[in-house]
Length: 148
Image (cartoon, rainbow, N blue to C red; front, side, top):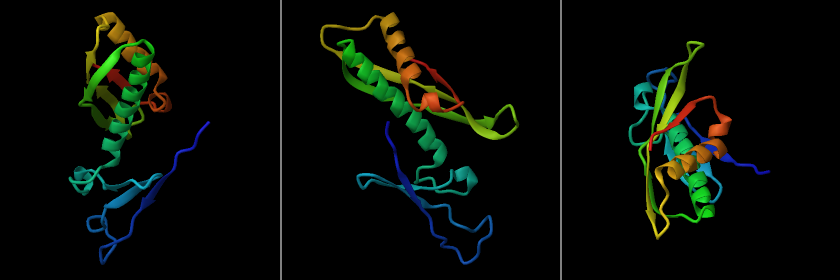
């Protein structure tokens, strides 16, 4: 159906290659020329001012949910004026005792314009269908909850 490419580039900048000293900074490059400075999370000796894989994972789930939601709302002839989400992912031990992002909570706040406004039940159904049809959510074992 489609392929998606990401290029990762890392080069050692430290004199030695010890756990505490090697750099975690790297770059994610995407088709179209977008480049994102990435690093490990600060808890794992990374830089706070770079995107870490855990944050990117949460953002990926939130973004996919939003894009699917917008498509569904449009098809139902609801007009979405704004969509904001402050999502949170939880890195914790899974059933096998390994660290994993086991849960992600999406907290979408949607503003609708126009005459036709969804009822609370219709809004809940839009979010349910968005979750069910989100490519990323369908690709992972993480429990994704929508609070909104």
